[in-house]
Each structure stands twice: as structure tokens, then as C-alpha cells.
Amino acid sequence: MKETVYFGTYTRRTSQGIYKADFDTETGQLSNLELFAAEPSPTYLAFDQHQHLYTVGSQDDKGGIAAYQTDGTVLNHVVEEGAPHCYVAVDEKRDLVYAANYHKGQVLVYKRQEDGSLLLSDMDQHSGQGPHENQASPHVHYTDLTPDHYLVTCDLGTDQVITYDLDQEGKLSKLYTYHSKPGAGSRHIIFHNHYKIAYLICELNST
Image 1: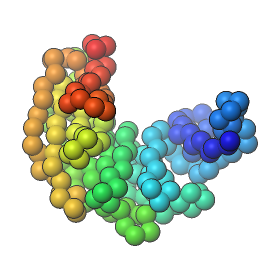
Image 2: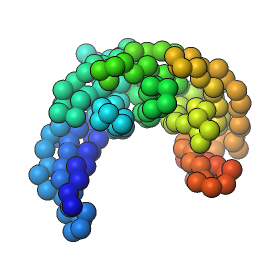
Image 3: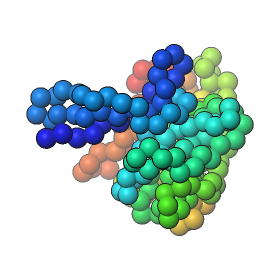
Image 4: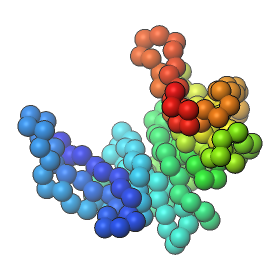
């Protein structure tokens, strides 16, 4: 059986953007590697149930998010001055797409339109810093859903895990803030499939 695999890349040297290839699930072999879409450093990808592809993106030296159809046609970019995002996630229930911006310390929410394109709905600007030399400012590294459909974010720059509620239009309401050990660098969180347990990965102290 063959499946299509997509690859996000850095485009600092020879790479040109998003690539795709055929993956043979029986042999483990990849074949027919080709460029799917030319996009500057599309390092994180997420599909929705309608096979729209969302990626961190750039346009005219501005950073943000990009939306594509599965044939490689670009639906739109939503960008502003500064670096692109580092993480993208899809909320099928609310027709929303979430993004984390590491360099700006921002959590962003986009409303998915009928054609799969995106409109910015809301943004929360984090503040603060940590004791590590890499924590001079907020660095939101992750933003995705909890099992009960709240939005949770990890801020590597402030050692915080922040949980939000959202309405159907994607407006954020901050609920809780968890503080990890100072200097830990909260980067990623995952939830147990059966128990009420969350596993937090911290980059700076390797825990």
C-alpha cells in the first residue's frame, strides 16, 4: 500500500519549500520525491479533514501562516512584519487554526473559511522572561488542543504553560497558568490517552 508523505523544510540552502513523496507501507521505501509548493522555510505542517494544508509561511519578507489545497495551489497567506510562526494546529470542531510564534511570543487564532483560506481572529501577546540566557523574552513554542478542547500553549521563554478557552469565532479567554521550574524552558506537552496526565517536555534543562 502506498501513501503520500509531506515534508516541511528549511530553505536556507538548496531546499525550495514543501515536498511530497510516495511511501510504501510494506517495504518502508520512499519514491517519487517532488516539490509540492515553493514556500520559504515551511518547517511545520498540518492538514485538516478537507485536505487543506496549513504551514508556517512567509510572503514579501513578512512572516505568518499559509494555506494550500492538496494540488499545491495556494489559498492565501496571512502575514505581518517579523518572523514566521513555528507551530500550526487545526481545530475541526470550531473551524479554527492555531499558531505559535516563537520570536514574537504570540499565540494566534485563525478562522477557517469555506474554501479553506484563513482570517486572523485573535492574538495573545505573552510577556515576561526567565533566568536562562535564552529567555530574555517570551518564546511561544507550542499551541494545540487539550483532550477537552481547551487551547494550551507552552512558552519556552517564560517557563509557562497557559490554558485558554475559546468561543466559536476564536476569541481567546485566558484560564490558567502553570509555572514550570525557572529556566526549564517549556517546549511541548502531550496528554495520556486514558488518564488525566500531561507530559511536559522542557528544552533548556532537558526534562
